Image (tube, rainbow, N blue to C red):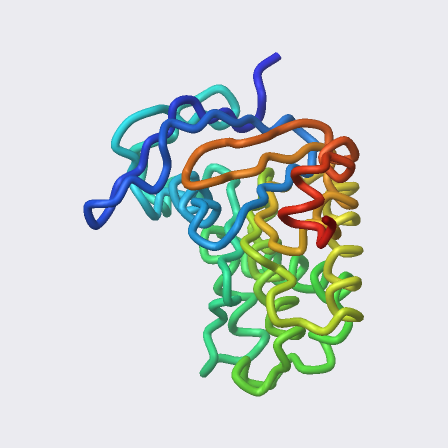
Amino acid sequence: MSALLAIDGLLVRFGGITALHGIDLHVEEGEIVALLGANGAGKTTTLRAISGLLQPRSGAIRYGGDRISGKRADVIARLGIGHVPEGRRVFERMSVRENLELGGYAVRSAREVGERIEEVFAIFPRLRERIDQRAATLSGGEQQMLAIGRALIAKPRLMLLDEPSLGLAPLIVATIFEVLRKIRLAGTTILLVEQNARAALALADRGYVLRNGEIAQSGNAAALAEDPAVIAAYLGGS
């Protein structure tokens, strides 16, 4: 049985810089996989290449056994890959409702979009309370909830999350990570880019560590959390 997501020899260059040096990684159906690394290591580039926002120079990205590298971002999204970018990227002038409705742009039935929005409100009750507020008026945590909720409207089989805890208070981070557990239990596979390595490895099944565009380490999340090199670099150890 092939992995849900398989990346082989992915090389990405832009602006005269090689951002990814032929990396290999895979994500099995139903897993949460953490992608760790310092700023500039290539984590965001990896997600953007998967979702079609960047085109690789060489290598292959396969999803469900089919090659998707080279396809347009909108085509990849319709295949069932949701991408929650770093910094939330909500539409600030639009209401919570309008942002969620945009997540259902590929869903033909307005009634189905409405039902999916209700499912998001069940996960994030706070969004229901702010349904008619402009996204710009939401707190950072609420905007992150909205960004995740918007991606969920499309019912992705695979969700790519880029730094979902960035800039959030610890209590909100705990809420977001608990939601990610529930999303996985509901059947969505997750590839998680996260600088909060301790929280990411506590949530994930497996992990990869990127360093200067290369996979430096990989393995079971619990084992990585006990690895001296990972502890020293990312978990505040000595």
